[in-house]
Image (tube, rainbow, N blue to C red; front, side, top):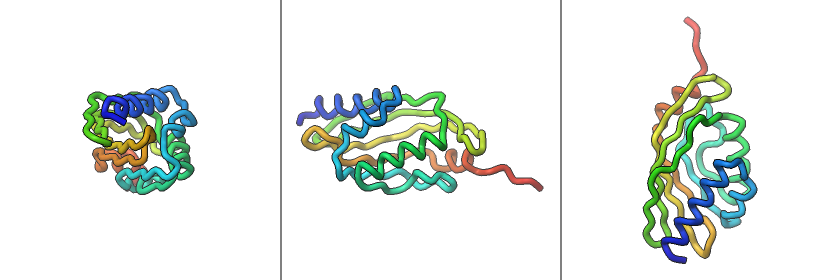
Length: 137
């Protein structure tokens, strides 16, 4: 696969996520995909996931935990089997009703027309604040 095809596959993933087509999104992933997000205290879906079924659980738990008001991939950079995406998102943590806003970076590995790896970076401090339950004095 060339870089243009890898970028198109990655863009299809964002389109499917944005439209709520999680099954369609999962179909773009290799069966043995490696999926890693930063750990956030209070967020059950963060950390390392392995395999398509484990990533399915990630999206279920993400949907149960957060409501997005904005999720925007802004720039796509491809080289070899890697596609790097710069973006931003905003929303609310459902359990705390606290808002969040963060810029993020996603690194996809695409081999033989399937996404085989995902690595995410974002402002973990902002997300942990949003997941923090209010305390009383």
